[in-house]
Structure formats: C-alpha cells, structure tokens
Amino acid sequence: MVLFFGLAAMAAAIALSVVTFASTRSYLLGQRSEVAQRQAFNNAQLMRNIVETDSSNIADLITQIRTEQGGYAVVQLDERPGRAALFYAQEPLRFTQSNLPDELVELTLKDKTGRQRFEFENRPYEAIGVAVPSVGLHYFEAFPVTDVQNTLRTIQITLLIGVILITLAAGVLGFSMSQNVLQPLTRVALAANKIATGGLETRLVHEDDSDLERLVVSFNEMANAVQQRIEREQRFASDVSHELRSPVTALSAAADVLVSRRSEFSERNQQAIDIMQKQIQRFDRTVLDLLELSRLDAHVAENETETVQLNDLIGRIMHRYGFGDVPFVSAVQSSDGETQADDETRLDRRRVERILVNLLENARDHAGGATRVTLNNDDICFTLAVHDAGPGVPPNERTQIFDRFARGTASRNSKGSGLGLAIVNEHARALHGAVHVEQSREGGSSFVITFPKNVGQA
Image (tube, rainbow, N blue to C red; front, side, top):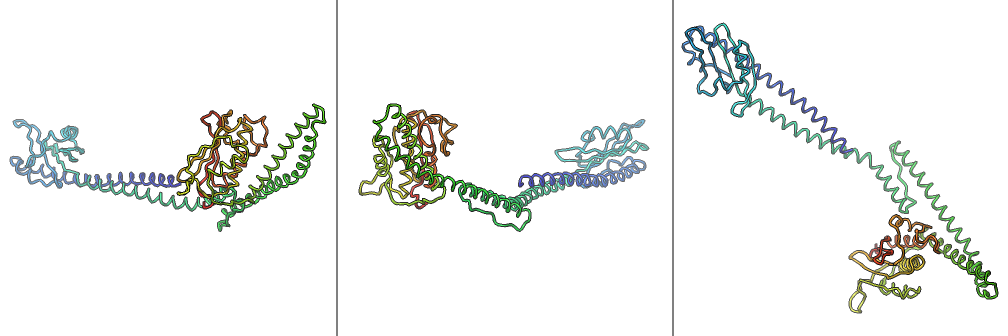
C-alpha cells in the first residue's frame, strides 16, 4: 500500500510537473519573443528611415539602435548598380552574419521575416530577421534568452523538489492508512498464531466498526469451534486410554499366567502365547503413551525445575534403563569440586529422562542400537544428541516422523506405538527447545535436542 501510494503520487506529480513546466516554458519564451519581435520591427523601421534619408551614416547610426537587453543588431543592404552589398554590425563586434543561423539568413534574404533559436558561445540566443524589400534592407537582431532559461531551471528544480516531497508525503500517508487498515488483520494474525501454538482461549476484542465486528465475531466463533473440537478429541483420547488401561492390565496378568505355564502347551500354542504376549506389551505401551500425550496436551504436568548436572544425570539415566554400554561423549565441563560446572543448569529432570530413554529405545528398535550419546553447549543452549548407524531417515520424512503415529520407511515393520518421537517432541517443546533429525557420521541418524540453559528461568 505504501508503494502504491508513493508510485501513484509520484506519477501524478510528475505528470502535473511536466504539464506545468511545458506551459510555463512556452508562455515565457513566447512572451519574450513577442516583445523582442515588436522591438525588432520598430528597429527595422528606424533603419529603413536611416537608409532613405542618411545612408552614408549607417555605420554610426546603427550603434544607436536599442535592442533587447544583451541584444545585438546586424544590417545588410542589397547589392545595387554601382554599389556592392554592404554589411553593418553594432560595436563592439560580437556577431557577424556567419554567426547567425543559416536557415534564418537564407529566409530573410528571400525577403521573408522569421525567427530562430540558436546557441552562441554556449549561451542560448534567439534571432529575428526582418526584410524591407523597398530599400533592399535585411535587418537581423539577436538577443540572449539566458534569463528565461535560468527562470525555467529554477522552476524545474522547484517542481522536482515538489515531486519528491509529494512522493514522501504520499508514502507517509500510505503507511499511516496501511497501519489503520492492517492493524485489525495484524491482531487477527497474532491471535491465530497464539491459537496455533496452544493458546486456545485466545479471542479477539470487539470492534466499533461494523465490518470489522463481523470479522471479529466470525473469528471468535471459529476459535470456539476449534477449541471445542480439540478439547473433545483430547478428552476422547484420554478417556479411551483410561478405559483401556484396566482390560490391558487384566490381559497382561492373564498372559503372564500363560507364559509361566508355557512348557505345558504344545509348540504351536507356545508360539501363539509368545505372539499374544508381544502384542499385549505393544498394546500396553501404546496406551501408556496415549495417556502421557493426553497429559502433555492438557498441560497437566508442568515443569518441576531443579538444579542438576547434565553429565551425571545422563550417565545415571543410561545405566538405569540398560544403556550403560552406549558411549557417552560430553564436551561440557563437569564439576571438579572447586569451580561451578558448565553442565550445571535448572530444568525438569523427568522430561530429560523421558526424551533420552525414548530416543535410545527408538535407536534400539529401529536402528540396531545407539552408537553414542553426545552433549555440547554454547553460551545459550545445550545440545543433546543420540546417534545410530541404522538405515537413516530420508530427508522427506525428517519432519513427519515427529507426528503422532507416524512411522519412517525403515520402521514400518518394527514394533512400537509410533508415539515415542511425538512424546520427545512435546517434552522438548516443554523445555522451550526443539528436536530434529540429521544424518550421523556413522551413516545413520542423529536425533538432536536443543534446549536453553536454566529452563526454569526462561
């Protein structure tokens, strides 16, 4: 809108300036030429009288001719019997006939009157030629139009400054109007962004303008519908997970009984018992993951921050869950008992534990196990990564695998609920961080979590 107002105003100002300059130039030059032409005709009549009465003193009398300011007069008498063509000019001699425009001289020598603009010594002049055939007189008068040119240049500069000022003023006006017009849309965009990031209670305030009020009402109704649907889906997932928890527990107990008496069954029945046990375990894992996601969606579990040392925390988590044989490489300085450790920070240790365990289990189930765990930091953030040497994640799937129930190409036939990475993503967001996957130097995948230092103070 600013660009449109600026360009439109500039185009209008330029068009108006061109018309104004052209009209002014035509008027000033025309007026100057008209005055000079009348003066030239009067001077030509005076020279005619001199030729008729005292032609022998033309050289002296021509100096008395009064021309326009800065003007100059030139007289030529035709050749007559017994007399060659005569040429007279005012003193001091500045012009000769050869300095005048050839077209004007030829026209005047043909006993016609004319005028023409030309340049002499880099200055603009206008010349007028008047023919008096009765006495064989051709009178030329040239005068400078520098004053007109200076006036036009001043007008031109003034118009140019006016165009610039008008363009700037139009830009300011366009910016002001765009702010007034776009401000409601900006509020709508901000409200939509808050809703998209989880602020489902965000609503627009009512507007005095009737048109904007319709937009506000429609947006708020849409937000209400979205909130109700999301909350209904969250309640549904939570209720289903809770309802499934009891039968799954009963099935697990029954499966444990069958497993304990597995040797009493035939080989075919033993295979069925093994399949049933694995599927019940997978079912149980899916229900637990759904319950956890329901709590994350409902923001039931808020951050319980405490001061921890990441090197020690990560090592203990890996040993507790059976991943103690995976190398842990840290570039973050630990405490030596005398100085504060670089790995000391405030965060929710439960979330870090859930993130790390899920990634290690994901590497175990889909990539043959993790090859190493690394921890790095800078002035602002910690970077925790789990690396593997598995088949890797194709670039076109590196964002989708963090969606719920999403499975990468390499893990479509593997066990798991498809919710582990989604839970990692939610916990990373709760730590004010982010998670992404990239190719590791071992050829597999590197799942990288970046979160700020001192999350509890973020």
